[in-house]
Image 1: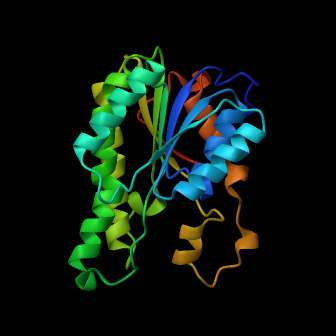
Image 2: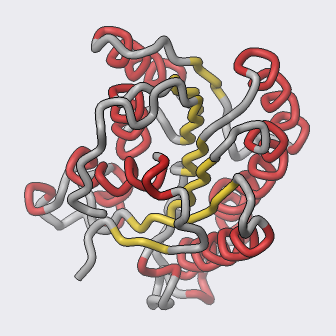
Image 3: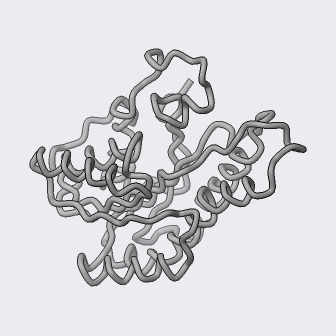
Length: 247
């Protein structure tokens, strides 16, 4: 899966929404999905970053993306319901959803976690993901074979000291994925998690400021698994938590 070679038309005519699409892994996933035929819906907080990804896709000959500027920290279920209706009206369905957006928060002792920061991390990493998925299910059910990918972390499988807020949000992500995968067994929707591993992103440098980024894989390096899980070759994979960089 991590050396998966996708056929050129893997995602032809697919409609795929990517959160956190303005930079890092989300931006690379959007460019990659577009290169393999998808029409991408770029969701993120910063319009200028989304526009840059939009320009990259169009200049490379990809289908014209849609842009959804949305700050997940302040979004409510009604925002996601309105977004879903717009997607159904414009595209008729949704074939894929990559939940990529997350925030790290500060690394600190559990007893020192700030209450507002806890709320913010849970809002972006968990609540927005839940509300968005709930709202988008009617659009995803209109697809013949929809893939929903959540982003997890090694600290969401085994707790790590001083990573409390982020780790708990990722433990919850794993739980949401497993619950939905079980509910939708043998149906047209499948739910899985990807753990990117140490990747050259802004969040990684925030967590490990002394690390040499040149020692890390780039977002482009880990795209084979993102392609595999989004395309039809993985249509029987459901309820799995997979690593881009297995040890």
